[in-house]
Image 1 (cartoon, helix red, strand yellow):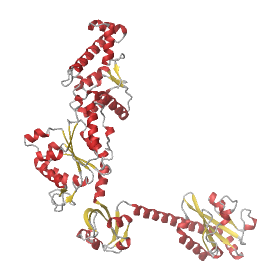
Image 2 (tube, rainbow, N blue to C red):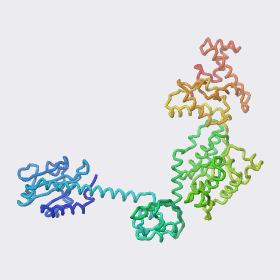
Image 3 (spheres, one colour):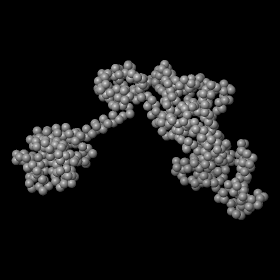
Image 4 (cartoon, one colour):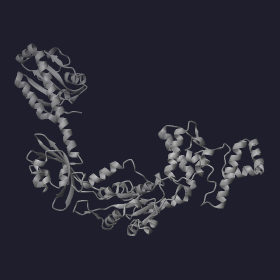
Length: 585
């Protein structure tokens, strides 16, 4: 609630001005009936309450606060709502309002016959005068509250703020600037910006255009890298906003990756192979050792990298990913290590930090590391060994604290034999190896993944498909999945878009899967028993598709297959063939 007491001095000045202008005593009370300002006999009453502070009383001021209506009484003796305590003869009272909220009252009170006559003769003009004074007080209160809120905002800003005049002298600052510069406000105010920073970049003559600049600040104990935003204010001076470079890097990374927080719970897989990989990754997550993740495209290497970061002690810091295959060779060095201004043609005029700097104290994920050119492998190895980097065109070594997680779908050992990958870099990266098996080597993960993907795309696309037709399941389980989990998810998304019924039919699967339906009866890495069961299941299902799933249909199927009806039922149970011809996913 807006409080008149916050502009007490203004209220007292208004009360004095009213009495000086018209020669009649005045008082101003707040929304609690407390006297904030007054003249004459009201001066001694400032701080006390009218009507005993009872906001529910039947008297004039309480009624004005409740109703917001003005009050004019030229003879208080005939007014039952008026209770004169000090021989008051007449009164004009006006509410002070901010929008629909009554925040106080201005009262003009006559104590002499002369004052009473003046009020009777001029009550309309006096009431208008009080209205203007009421508006003045309300506007001053709003202005004061806005200034107070602005001051709170400026003081709580995460950036440091220095305001300098046209001569470069600091005339305002905030709490964050004191913290970042390690100086008290008294030490900053009145100081030339040139004395605070040795760099000529902050000379007053260079503060006349908007730009961003990185500067080194020395506080006597250590050097700090600060990122400045310079905002000129015409005819006044310049506002300098700045942050610690490491905070900028962390914030940028958090914003960039806020939608990509991944844990091991987000990595789906029930097979023994996947459980082993997840257990090993979880075991090494807390370490700072370098991890090399290998596996075919689409197996989820980046998901594992993100989950390792989320489980590590670096989880509060940034995760930065860079695809070494997606960036041209000529630009990869600047992307990794950054550059100073003017380092090469087309470079940003202010320079730019690289991924190593941005990932400081966090995790840097080097995807497709097998595609990194040999000359960059040398520079990467040097950075990993020394934990120091230099920007292109720079001469100042920068210490870094970054955990490296690399990934590739290539066989790096074969590349080493062909002199396409450095052996020393391989051993530096391969401290903790993690291999993610392809989906075809863990078929027990397929049905749970189909179910999980179906639920997800039902939500996204807005459908209520309950599962997969048995024939569709067989086609999906028999497919080779060269694109692994990524291809499976794409296939389910396609099918959910195409399907108009309640179960996904074979006809609504992608063409490449339908065309391969009968192509993979034999799994090269499956045991003879597994291959036999798979073949039996497919043969029985194809037969039942022809004869039907009724009891008579099963009798016919048993006759066609040359087995007894009881043997058919036993085989169906062993092979998990359901009687409704569908497998719910």
